[in-house]
Every structure is written in structure tokens, then in C-alpha cells.
Image (cartoon, rainbow, N blue to C red):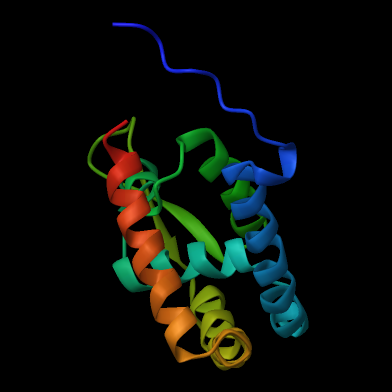
Length: 148
């Protein structure tokens, strides 16, 4: 069996380039809305997962977010240093869990309506059908890519 012929695509046709470009556009909208809180959308998401989940390990959080531990640790650093999230000890001295502090929960509560405004802006720009189609395509893509 012979190898498949190489693709002859321009860089603009690259799937990664297109997905990242769309993500940057959407991120700009959320960043503008969240600016009064000082949170980036990635920080908002982390804070939301930690606040909702309660004590959660970095390993569990990285699995929930489909990200590697190194990237997650880097993104958590500003939240930890500002006291929005803290590490709590468990019975195992080698394992720590993350919890949202009182200040972190209050900040998330303040940021939530700003996030909802951003979400509404993105959905209004794309329309109901394109939003649903995009969500479905992303969900199916994640399922297929998870197998690799």
C-alpha cells in the first residue's frame, strides 16, 4: 500500500491556522467585556471551573480542560499569586488541590454577567444556526481528535 499523496495547500488553508484565527477573534470580544475585572477569558474559565468544582487537583483540572499540566500551571500562576485561587493541602503531602478563595468567588460572580454579555455578542454576530453548527462541529472534532 502506497503512502497518500501530500496535500497541496496554502498556509491560509491550514486547519490549525483557521481555528486559531477564529479563536483569537472570539477571545478579543470576551477580553473587551471582561476588561473591567482584570481577568483574561482563560483565567475566567479556570476560576469558573475551580469555583464550581470545589477542591480540584491540577491533574483533574487539566483533564477537564483538555490541556497539558505545564500550560495549566502557567495559566494558574497569576490567579494563585493574586490570591483568587489557592492551593489547599490534602492528606497526601505530594498532592495539592485548588480552591477559589472568597475574593475569587466574588470576582467570578462580578465577571459572570460580563462574560454573558460577550457570549450574547458572539451568538448575535453568528446567529442561532451558525452558533449551533459551530458547537456541534467543535464537539465532534474534539471527539475524533481525542482518539489520536
